[in-house]
Length: 164
Ligand code: FES
Image (cartoon, rainbow, N blue to C red; front, side, top):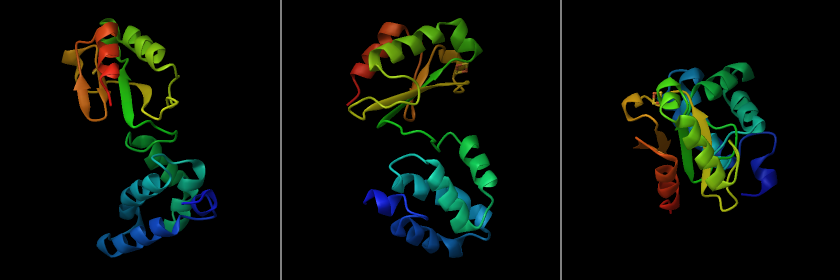
């Protein structure tokens, strides 16, 4: 899809069509918001820039503030470009007490990008995260849906090196 088609005034045609197909299955536009955001995110290459959020708000006739509220609440929506492998390093208390900050530094050093940036090859991006719900495996990180626990900086780098 061309840039102009993607970043015009509204949603790309295909995204609009996909949302319209879902409409009869949802009782309200609020209920349709989550799937509509997933569709928009897919069409914007895996993340939701401001214009995508505005386009969804207009399409569903919802306040932009409401749409922003949902986007910022759910971890599955991204306001920055993300890599093919999305890495979340836990820096909450249990993980920090067991070396979570060193894991974060090791990931940053190895990938040579900062948080919310994507490696030049498009493979990876990372963020720090507040408790991934696996404190018993501290320090830990998630890559996509997969948990990696009891990490050391060296083990974290080995895992990153093993990614396709
Ligand atoms: S504090 Fe790290 S998973 Fe809970």
